[in-house]
Length: 316
Ligand code: FDA
Figure 1 (tube, rainbow, N blue to C red):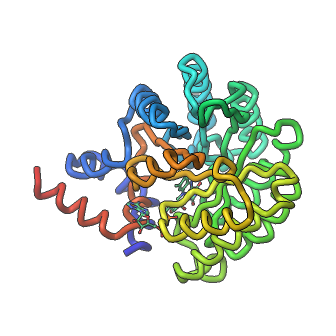
Figure 2: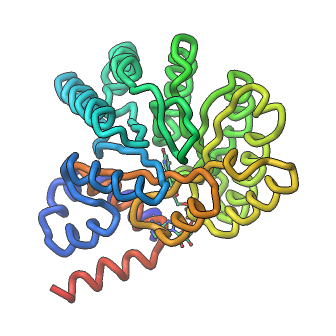
């Protein structure tokens, strides 16, 4: 099921046609506050009122012409300005394939530079606390990991306010995390959302969960904190979150030093609970019209979501 849904996310024919169906649009709306930037900003404001920070991302990937990537940069610059004016505790997260990495990596790097150069300075996650705003880079399919880490490393040399996502399902990630720790990086740890071969990715969920926990321990260890690592545990997995919280407490890590992130519309009560209990909590809010591949990946993460889609078909 997972493989079928992830393949559907990569199918051009479906990408163009499926969003025309109302029941699909309606099911996707559970995970999106709306298609417009205003919808995303309004969601960020509502979450901020509950002490929850946000990461905004404009949906889109694998652009095929430079002008498209330039338009994406212009839209993000406008978004950054609106976040600044609204004083929201909001950062942004981008995909390199949306900034033109498939076309020309130097072009993509210069697009990243334009965004990072315009970031507002500080974000208040919790009252009285502020940390520098970060431009986050999503991690896409395994063929993009090398280029993503290379451009990230180059970006960090001139600008510390950049963060990158790493995926616990990849066998290589432990090594990548070691080198990210040595550069004091900002790292968002996820399980991984794409379909990868067993040579590249750990196939069993139980083993991925275990690897996630071990990577979380590395990112929260005293050496990593000494290097200035900012670690964001991006997962909805209640068991894993509980384990990380318990372990961090046993290491004397204060609650406000632990940061969690989830996706909009998933485990809302857990998001509120974490924020209430004093953990840094963020929600990734996606918006835009190009939501089909992203929605398919959300279905793949939880088969029960497919039932939700089917229910929408019959409740019209
Ligand atoms: P897992 O899949 O084990 O789910 C644990 C529990 O969470 C489930 O039992 C269910 O209750 C709930 N849940 C999880 N997904 C759900 C869904 N779609 N609908 C409803 N309930 C759900 N991936 C990637 O490859 N590159 C990236 O850059 C990012 N970025 C990113 C940012 C943030 C903030 C988050 C939270 C996630 C990502 N991801 C990602 C996605 C990530 O790789 C992963 O696919 C999802 O987070 C689901 O995995 P969990 O860790 O939640 O665990």
